[in-house]
Amino acid sequence: MSKDLIFHEVYGSYYNVIAKILAEAAKEKLDQKRMREIILEHAFSESVLAIPDMLRSGKWPLIDEDYRTEIFFTPQMPLTIIQKRWLKAILADPRIRLFPGITEPEELKEVRPLFRQEDIVYYDRYADGDPFTDPAYIANFHTALQALEEGKALEIRYLNRRNQETSLYCLPDHLEYSSKDDKFRLHLRSAARRRQSVQQQLNMARIISCSLAEWIGEEAEAPGLVRETAVLELIDTENTLERAMLQFSYLEKETERIQEEDSPGPARYRISLHYDKSDETEVLIRILSFGPGIWVTGPEKLRSDIRDRLLRQKRLFSEK
Image (cartoon, rainbow, N blue to C red; front, side, top):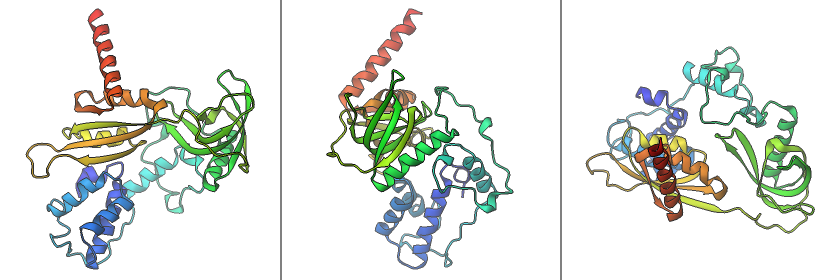
């Protein structure tokens, strides 16, 4: 295997998927459909574009054209030292500690981390992130997670935008993390609040306390939840596809190759990104960070916003 896979940020997923594919091939139970099922179940959706091609083309000479392999033993996947050091470093992230059940395994106790949290320098991020180590924040986060897992309602006391304490009775829908803000937001499916309009989301850091409750109201979609889809196209030069997958990893998306595999030149892809309307500005900024490497084919409103932003930047640059 090449070093770019060994040190890839999702290399563990790739290796384990290949191991499962080879195990099926060794039992002579592998075909194109089964390979696709394994990849979709255990890897990222865009991997169905790359893994079968690498295996069938002979770039990874592990199976032949008939989906058979010369490997007759079930592949074992012991952790390497570099993997253990990476896991040790990742487990030190305070955001991971927010999720119950994720603890450091015994085999990592004596391992030196690959890096420390203080070694990481973040850029293009606000400095007032959530207090991930605060006991009250952790307790509220755990309660919100439990409500989501058990389908329970929440009774919440929180500070609104005017720093006034407010009560809220709601059904949570999902938690969302913003890497730009370094904050978690709790999105609501249904909500009721005394004498005030309903918000579609709450910043976890502004929640004073929350407790589980039974939902007795009428369940309805919280107002203001608007889903949008941005359709992007790119030519995969200078790892553009890989960088786009990393940049938009937090969004639901579909990726498809729109160029024949035997066509000359770099491959061309279409990516459909699904996002909340309230996050459109952040999505737009991330798209613009690719420059001419990615272009937007829809919707027209997003294309227009990008044109307007670029024209403003050009005008400001000309005035200097």
